[in-house]
Amino acid sequence: MTEATDIPDEVIEKLSDYLDGALAPDAKADVDKKIAEDETWKRAHDEMVETRGFLSGMQKARAPVTFANDVTETIRKRSANSLFARKTFGDRVPFNALVVVAMIAILVIAWMMWSSATGSLKGNQPQTGSDPGSATTAPFKQ
Image 1: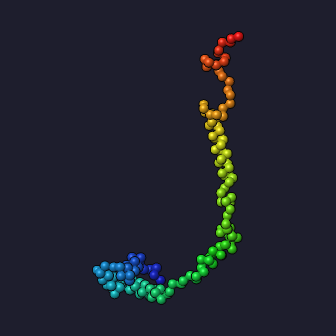
Image 2 (image 1 turned 135 degrees about the vertical axis):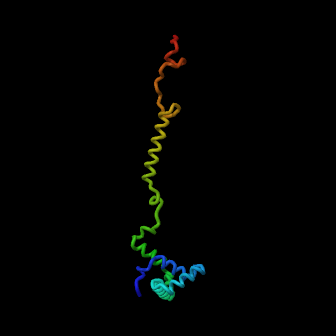
Image 3 (image 1 turned 90 degrees about the vertical axis):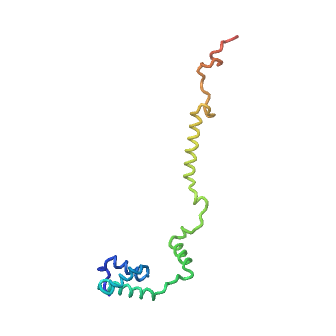
């Protein structure tokens, strides 16, 4: 059997469609004519028919019934049970990252409340005396 590397791809594609029965009648007649007259087409056709004969005699191999369980067990052994082991809630949730995010959120909220005019975290600030009812501007009575 010779190698098919010297056969153009177009010939292989056309012959594949021809053998699959996917060609129109006029294209099929054209391929029949080329197979009869052209040595390259005839050789490619014979090789494809031979290969299809080999492949049609093969049967599909079936996986054993325990295939999935065997693969799972092999993975479990090789991974030291780290892939299929039950994980606790702490193993699945990154508590350290959550604590950092919570601390940053608390600091941001505290800063916003401290810097706002209506925030409840502001300390008692001295009054400037511009308020007409403030104790510093009210006259002193005895």
